[in-house]
Image (cartoon, rainbow, N blue to C red; front, side, top):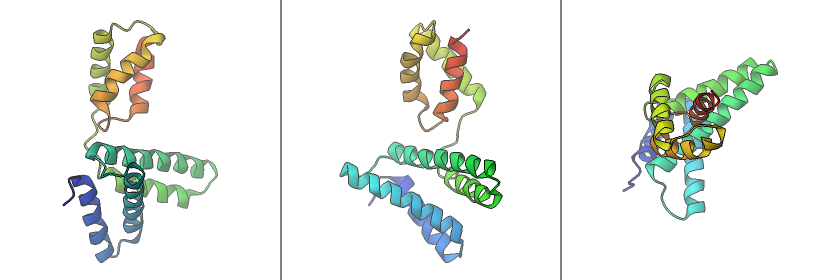
Length: 151
């Protein structure tokens, strides 16, 4: 039995989507399972729940970038397809914390690390990555840290 509950949940969802005839959902979830399995083969062991979350987040990020490019090129139908993939994959992520909560955690980390300038960003981000990985979009966290340390 798999210890990775998220991977098992995705596999179950693929079967449900297949039985109910949801082609796009089936394709998206199979794509995510394929990415997870590829990483397990590369790693030569089963992924942890956290590693699985990172793969899904990476796929969402790629879909967001693709959607933006399709919209810029006037390809609304392809952009909508990417947005739907984001919606499907997002269901499998843990609840993301709000921007207000992120700001508070960032301020606490800056104070804890004694960070004063842009040179301290790496130190603060290292601390925040341990706390927020999988719970918040790290690009947003980085943007908030940069904003706080540029004052």
